[in-house]
Image (cartoon, rainbow, N blue to C red):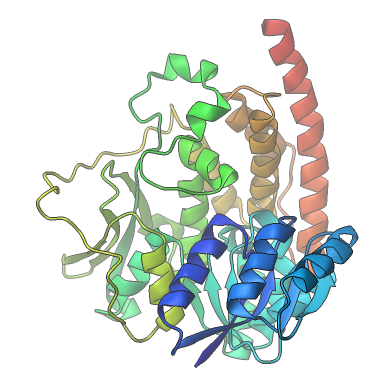
Length: 396
């Protein structure tokens, strides 16, 4: 029986993770949950899965959560924690042997890092962890013996393909991306894109930030950085190709010219099941590729002039040190400002580029260094966002 702690249980990935747990009650058990502010959904999860510990983002909501749980008349109430310490407590729960990192942004970094340091198996769905602190996290995993299992569909696909060969036999990785909702939108029209349009992904149901990142292709840039840390390859060995059908989730090319691809429906529950039950493959009735509907598989190179975020991510990766952390912080601020209608869609990469240009890469030797870098970059990004927002208002 695998004992699981979930960071971000009320988010999109967290909810789908719990759906997978329900399919395999004889193999998977939830012992701890950490959520954001949705106490109603968290209470329902407690009633279904009976964790021993739950954590909520705000300590002010603890009384309301406790009262809601009492009304459910559960046989046993879980321990309730809050804030940063609550997240860490969930990640370090003594009975959890696997931690699912499914928070959005850098909020779950500390808990994830400490869970890896404690030797727990990590099912990683939060790519920002490795973008901001890839060296720290992977070094901690190497020391503790923790195994990192990727949940992102692209890296999960690569993990599956790599089981067919040795690391020394890999020539390159090919990360696929749908191209997002604006693949065929002329560049001149991107300036008028609305948040609602950016959130209409053609295939995947995801949280708001990752959906916007998919629309700008920043998500592919993050995945290139993440792949470097996950699989120990050089940046030039990691390529991106646009694949609108989202049927091939990624590919591995080996030194003999063979290419292995993983195909599946665009459903996050499949990579979650793979990670939660690894190294076994268990039967499931939820995932089946329809060969009758699969008419064609298209590929094209990404347009980095139209979507400069991918170029910016590669530049941050090449500079190394603190620059990927700065990249992540600037992107988070830019996306939030766009969703709040303070910035135009085309100002997202503009803000990120300005913050990167103002930053000098320095080594990040500790978790405190990463968190300090994130705060500083975030503060400067907010300053740039305010200036760009004023310019956008004047242009209207």
